[in-house]
Image (tube, rainbow, N blue to C red; front, side, top):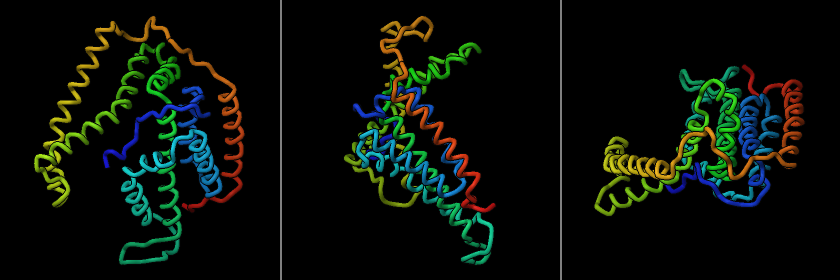
Length: 272
């Protein structure tokens, strides 16, 4: 399970998505996340999903990696979908005591599950095609106006990127510790939920020790290289908008117009 988590990993490439400006990719990710949650009917939902799959295709990252990113949250998707089955209005299709399942509940359950899946896929496109350095520069440039309010934008962007970058590293470390504990006879797969949680205690302690050690080593390395905040720092690669970014912006404006029109004209999938 741990080896299946791909969050925070970057896969080098020369695809269209890799060549896009990281600021544009970050804005597009937020843009489509808002769109997927504003979709009121299946047509606008389908258009947003097709756009998401177009991004996956243009990224040229193997589809199996996107499926691996969905595997850890599969339980959350199913649990959320089942929970929303019972929160629908209208004539019940199935009644078991006080529990009623309506058509609106089923449609609402499908919409919620699809939104969560698309949310993870959109985030995966961003992290798969954007290096941590590019992501840091993009966050710093987008949040630059906050610097006038004396907010340490560079430090904030650096912390976010380092945290995202070390997710795969810590997951790999967890996998190694679990394998070492199993080799010493630890049983982590049998028993009930409480027993499994207790079995993780010998894993969590060395994991925290390793995490603090890595953080200390990273801080020492940055200090030895005379690293300081963003004031006066220069960039080896200056971010510049290209034709691909301009074309993506035009498509987003057209998409927004079509999206709003369809949301107004077509009836909502779920009647409140």
